[in-house]
Length: 214
Image (cartoon, rainbow, N blue to C red):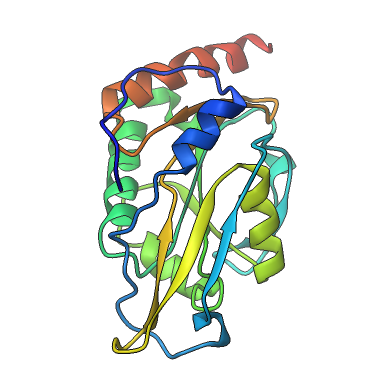
C-alpha cells in the first residue's frame, strides 16, 4: 500500500473513491490453501463507485440481502480470511470502533466481504470472524457475485499467482472502509490509516440521522 495517510471524514465523491481504491493492500498474502483455477492471474478494478444493494451468502450459509439492514448504519470492507495483516488489523480496529460507540453499537453493522470466494466458504469466514469480538457478517458468493459488488463499491483486487508458495496465489486488494447510512446510501469512506476516533466521529452523525428517522 502506498500513499500518505489521509485524515478526516467526508462524503464520497466518485473521484475520491477511485483514488482510495487505487491503494492496494499489496502486503496481503495467502497463507495456505489448495490451488484453484482462480490462481490464474485475475484482476477486478472498477470505474464507478455508486454503492447499492446486493445479495450474497453469509457466514451461516444463509442468503443475505443488504436491504434487510435498512435503518442500520453499515460499514463494509473487502478482504479475505487468510490475509495475514490488513484484514485482521481492520477487524480488530472495527471491534474497537463498535465498543467506543457504547449503547449505540447495535445501530451499526459490519459487513466483511471476501475477495477470495474460491477459498472463503461460509465456514472459513465464520472461523475467521470467531477470532474477533465484533458483531460482523462475513459474506461470500460466486466469483461473479463478488465481482459485481466490488464494482458497485469501486473496490478492487488482484489475484497474484505465487506458484512457489503453498497457497499458490496471493490477493492484493483495496482497503477502503465504506459507510452506508440507514437508507443504504454510500455516504463516507475511510482509508486504511483512519483511526478509531476518526471512524467513530464519522459514524456518529449517521447514527443520529438514523435515530431521527432521516
